[in-house]
Image (cartoon, rainbow over all chains, first blue to last red; front, side):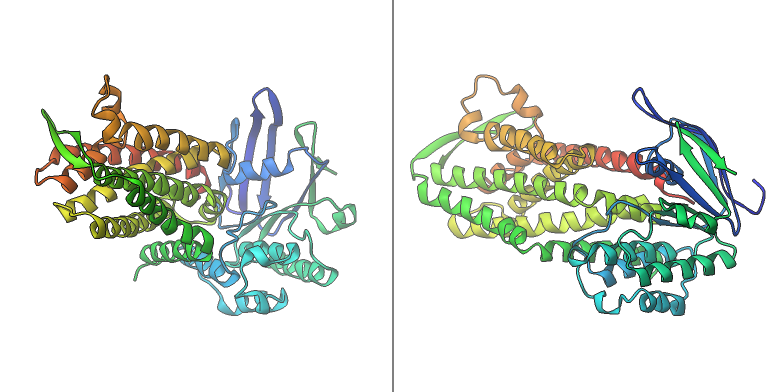
Length: 206
Length: 258
């Protein structure tokens, strides 16, 4: 795998029983590349992302990484019985094993996403927008080389939506590769490339 | 403290906080044994019953009052059921969060060890609680061994609860599988009043609660040693834990990226 390729997906297929979801999908994500993944509801976008991360085992094909990962899932996977600060401390301990944590950056994330007043709250008591911020912040926390984002601004208000795009620009400028599942057509000009999942195939929209 | 130790400590502390925040669950964890044991003390009679104890190559028949037998049998049943139930929650409820953390870089082995360490602590606390209640009501011949028997039973059933929890995505199916085995085994067939007069005991010997319960009964009512039961209990624990760890490892190994 060449040095500036962060992730390479070759011939990735996934079936659940007789129902085929993905058919020989190919993808490469390079440094500083911002890729959009679009498709109709139920077309297999989340399954594709889950195959990339190992949450779902592909029926065939290969996924290779050459970098650190940040992942923002669509599902509500957080532990509801923990407080926000407990979650972040735990995640930081996990990240610290491999990555340098920039405290200034973490503090700026907390400030810009307006999370200061929520740090001691239990995750089960958060609104859906705040819950989403926690997931997104977890993905950005260690400044990964590659971001995999599954509808990351779901539930954000307009101000947070703009903060989100500020961070995306900042990460892209620092050569981070980004793969994002999106539904909004008006965002299309922001991506370097857009792939569409259609009839189980991943096609590059020219 | 190195990073792995910090992670283990955090998993332990966070598991404890999760339990402490579930106040009703925590109260029930101690109220249920207290309630069942009180009913046993209140209802059981003082008449003596002959019960059979199984050793490696022999059996012994001893005379024990109905109250003493009921108390130990109920304590073992409640202990087995609650530890299986709690392990099921511990390994099942936040399995998606655990998988998410593994995808972020948490080693599956650390997650398993951290959870298991906390589980063992809960088993020990429950065994102490149950042993103290029992010792206030009836004389126990070998207190430490009787307590150890409850710990063995808790770990055997906890490992079973953990296995059921990680295999099944559906919480209700997992719960019913625990109810099925716990009721059949520790709640019925290991009752000394039942098995002492059973016409067929072979199947009873193969059930997971058999050896720990024999160790509890022997240690509580006699001065005899039943090391065979301890050895066999450890064999069950080892097999169940290996199976639990293997299933968890297989379910999470693709998520961990070097």
